[in-house]
Image 1 (cartoon, rainbow, N blue to C red):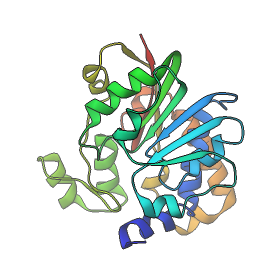
Image 2: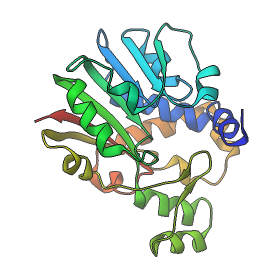
Image 3: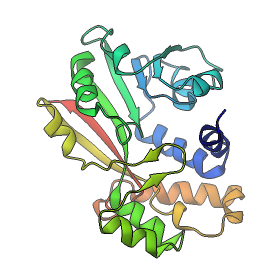
Length: 238
């Protein structure tokens, strides 16, 4: 693996990554018996988990991630990007997962249009995206990097360690890219734990359990959603 991919892979075993996926699965409300597309499924963490109770198809362009993906449970892995989306049948998925992908995709409007085509009328899309306010909070509080925070506030680039420049978009932009969608629910993720500067304490199970409880307690409160590092959008057809 190249250094960027390796760094991301190693982070997945950290307690804060495990908290992330526990929160996501809680917000997805234990979906079962559905046909799921995980677009940009990376190392397959969520694909593998959902495959226990669902028919899952993952699409990922990065060969190194696919070769090192988690696959304890059976799911179909496809190599590619939007080209593979275009090959899928219309109205063929109950759930579409797209987590931390659109910030880096040049064709994000086309991707959203394809999602609308392949999503069943009663289905939903789960989009997790970087939240601009949360990034500023992390820069100032956790990283103590006020210079970077001021640079981003003044229009400078924000860089994700493993994937490059983050192209932020507003939650409502998804509705502008394609008519026929509504945002059914908005959650916050990573409101508190990334602001804790003591990384050692994050390895304590009692801390993890209390932090998970606190994160879930505020994940549907608007004031906390606005400062969370990630926003989680549940999108349905209107």
